[in-house]
Length: 200
Image 1 (cartoon, one colour):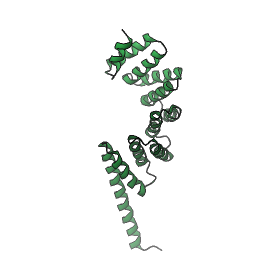
Image 2 (cartoon, rainbow, N blue to C red):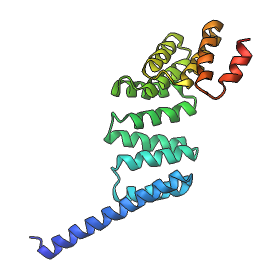
Image 3 (cartoon, helix red, strand yellow):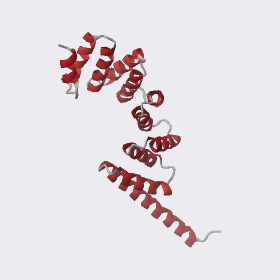
Image 4 (spheres, one colour):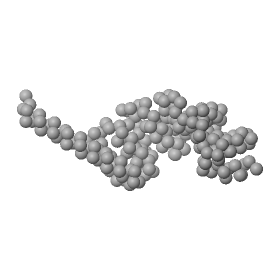
C-alpha cells in the first residue's frame, strides 16, 4: 500500500508537470503569434512529451509546421489531433487547407466536406467547399456552395470574387460583372482591377 507521503509526492509532481506543460504551451502560442514558428514547434513538442494526447497542442504544432512549409509534419499532427476530436471544424479546415496548398484538391474537399457535415451553415466552410469544387472543375457544385456561403454571409467579398472568376470561365460575363461590382463595393482586394479588366 502506498504511503500518504508518497501519494502526496505523486500529486505534487503531477501538478508541477502539468504547470510546466501549460507554460510551454503558452510559450508556443507566443512564438506562433510573433511568427517564430521554429521556436513554436519546439515549445509545442516539449508540451507533447508530457501530454502527447493534447489535441489543441497537436493542432497548434500542425499549423506551425504548415507555416514552415512542412506539409507532411503538419498533416501528421492535424490527423493526430482529429483522433481525439474528430468533428472539430478548425482541425478539419486546417487539414483541408494544407492539402489545398499542395494542390491536392480531392483530399482538401474530403476534409472540407467533413467540416460541412460537422457544422451546417458555416459560411467559411461553405466557401472552402466552393473553392475546392471550383479547382476540381465541378462547376455546378462550386456555384451551389458559393451561393450557400453568400446566403449565410452576404458581405463575404472573397466569395463574390471567386464566383466571378468561375462565371468568367463559363463565359457568363454579365453574372461575373455583377459579382465583381459587389466584391468591389465590399472593398475586396483585386475586385476593382478585375472589374476594370472584364467589365468595360
